[in-house]
Image (cartoon, rainbow, N blue to C red; front, side, top):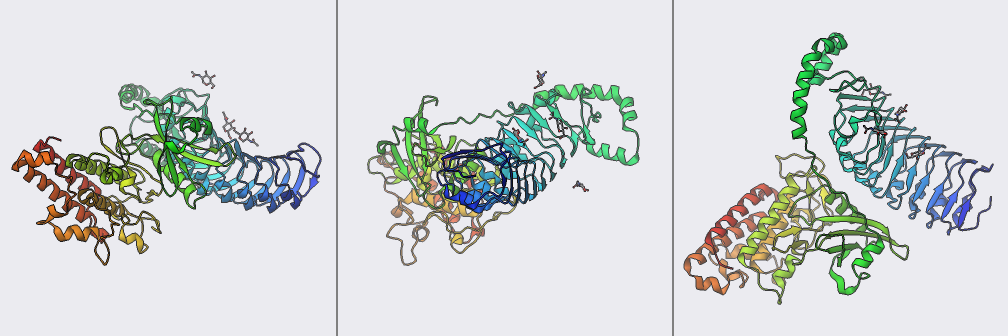
Length: 618
Ligand SMILES: *[C@@H]1O[C@H](CO)[C@@H](O)[C@H](O)[C@H]1NC(C)=O
Ligand SMILES: *[C@@H]1O[C@H](CO)[C@@H](O)[C@H](O)[C@H]1NC(C)=O
Ligand SMILES: *[C@@H]1O[C@H](CO)[C@@H](O)[C@H](O)[C@H]1NC(C)=O
Ligand SMILES: *[C@@H]1O[C@H](CO)[C@@H](O)[C@H](O)[C@H]1NC(C)=O
């Protein structure tokens, strides 16, 4: 067939034979439908030249061989349907770089094998995903939890094993999940109970075990299918499942019973009356405890919405600019106080797309009042058809910490504000390092990434370089996985990263220490003063403790305090001295000599209490 128009629609004909590699010459094609023909052979790799292609339908043919990697070059693809062919080998990971894919990716009914590549987390816009009826094996990748726009997930009829990943708790908008006919094990996660959009959950014919959850979708037996899981039990006699024994150790009991060969049904009958009694008591108790945390749905914004909010991304609205993005302030009627900030990623910068994904990941996994709140993420096209990625974040009226330390026009920061900022930053870092699973290392702490809210509380922002630590060992300060490489900002980046050490929480502690010293001295670590081996730490260390007053930011102790008398003065100097000591110990050369964030947080909180007790008027 010859195709020459922008749109090529030739479905349901009798075309047979190979797809000619000259298809790559039709660079302006946007829509190709060759479904339901008798095309065979491999898809030519020249398909990757179709950069404008939005929709590609090749289902119900006889194509074979691997899915060509060059399909990953079709950066405009919105729909890709390769179902019902004979594609083999593993799924090419290049497909998962297509974050344009949103209206569907269907690879079902082929002979694809191997594991599902974990790069699948790159499909941040995908709605329906269908990999059913292949020969995929291994675990369901945790990264699938990053595809937060998923509406339908069909993985049935494969050879997948392992458990249902915890990360699925992020897929709150999903309507259909079919994982039937695999070899999945473990328990059914409880979080599905709180999924309001879920209309179909098919887990049948697997190896799942334990107790079925009770609430939400599990109340409607026509929406949940669990047949063919021999080790599942239920505490409701409504479902066609054996009754569980009312104990959290039910699984062990169950196994013991199986091993000893006692007829469970008989036993269940004998115990039924007491079981029901216990169950009723437990249920009334549980319904009080299991208040699900409330999640807010992510709002979605179009390019036009954001352009309107920021006055067409006008330079007058520009409030900041970094390596990977520019930040504009704007007004959105839907937001509480109307003001928002939009961070537009400079996608032509190497690393910027990755930084967008890193930020999305980080905000999806975090919630803390000392982190900037992200309202939504937007990945779409601008009005010229270029890729457009942005984060919509809370607008921080008081700007960055940097602007307060160095501004000529703002009033100087009081010591009290500086102490509060130090406490807030420590609270946020302690949360990232120790309360997030997996732990998060910020990797790019500096005063321009610390924003101040209306009440001069500090919020960390810019998670573009943030890293999740894979293995969590809370007893060690240097939990680490990936290589640092060139990340972070000069002056704030821990020295060990420069020599290729791994990312660790100790790196953030270093940057924190530098910021503390910077706040107290009003000097940047990159100040011209610091050369020939002199650094900010050495400069402060040399004056510590006797001559500390000589190197302080002159604004730190206001004139009012000097008038206020000796007592306040002595107390303030004591707080400053403790802060300096903390800053110095955080910014020591060797990572293992630095304190951990919980210790830092405890210490800086104690300093704040001591400061408050002075009752200095500000
Ligand atoms: C794949 O799944 C989608 C969404 O559930 C469905 O509409 C489509 O028909 C499925 N594909 C095949 C070939 O069954
Ligand atoms: C399913 O898993 C079990 C144990 O995990 C294993 O023995 C069995 O061979 C697996 N079945 C298939 C079809 O892979
Ligand atoms: C669930 O999956 C099984 C096996 O794939 C299938 O036979 C059954 O029809 C499905 N049920 C629903 C409600 O989709
Ligand atoms: C159960 O689900 C079916 C199909 O979605 C629906 O028609 C029915 O109303 C539901 N029943 C209850 C009690 O929610």
